[in-house]
Length: 437
Image 1 (cartoon, rainbow, N blue to C red):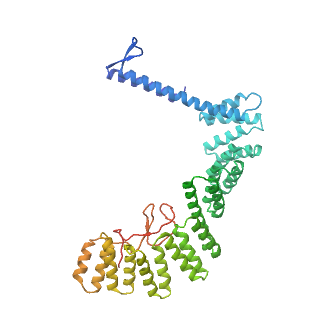
Image 2 (cartoon, helix red, strand yellow):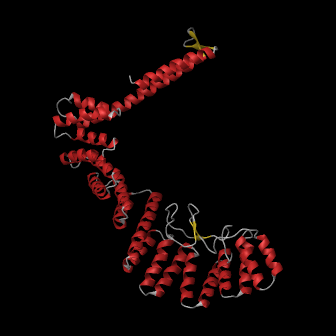
């Protein structure tokens, strides 16, 4: 019995005496119709606690015994296990690694072909953060049994603990082959590739994962992830001026998840860099049809403005409104466009339409007030500014992460806050936006 156990039971005894003196009430306990005992409340509570502790200890012992027996059956020699190995195993299971190490070393020396003592030694040293020795013993075990799953899994943990991604990746690959590429090993292999941003390898593993999953909902989720990996691969190609590869991978991403905004945007950019302006426009137009995200309208807007085609910008938003006249954001965007071109009466009309759908918008109050001011109607402007109170808005259009609410003035494909992909929505209702200088 350890010192802590003795201390615990001593404290329990003192507590029972204390509560017995404090609680004098007697509780009758009937074991049978004729057999009755009378006990103080505190003693009864103590008995119940001790019984519960005893049951928990028995269950823990049974669980450890099953684990111990399983290890013995799997790794025992034809003859009887050595006493050193048995004792070392007992210490290892009970968490007494310092006592286990010399006994396991002795057991490993007695039989140089036995992997289990070496594997357990590696685990014991890893628990003490001695990763060099852990790797050394696990590598020795692997040299004896290259296909031993227990050894490979623990060697992979060693490399993970030392942030050795290349060797961790190789070990996970070996483990996947040994386990006949089951789902757990494939998930593990994919995650290792993701850690090193090896998107193409992650995609190859993801295809195998999707092929093995039968549940429709889980399969859909994994296909969504495949779309993300294709996009990241495309983005890497785009950054390296490999526009054709970027185009192919963005198409693959859209095929996996057509509602994913980022690959639609990148596809248009890749076409644009390749000198294919018409295809770029078609990519963004298709992205808007697939997702309904106004981001595509803003990108097409910029495309036309860069080419000095203001009439095309107005046509763009008018066409979008004709298909969805109750979308207040589209009216807002058209109104904002009219302001850029100093068409204030038209802007006022669009903002008032947007305001009818969204009377809580501070942004629209500010914009309408600004138009009144430009028209020298300062009384009406003052009323609109008073409605907006003293709140200042951060920017005219901000992009919002649908998962965590992170907002940025510049669009990015992946949220820098929660790391989720697909930031896509404008929000003109937030009080911290600033629409006019």
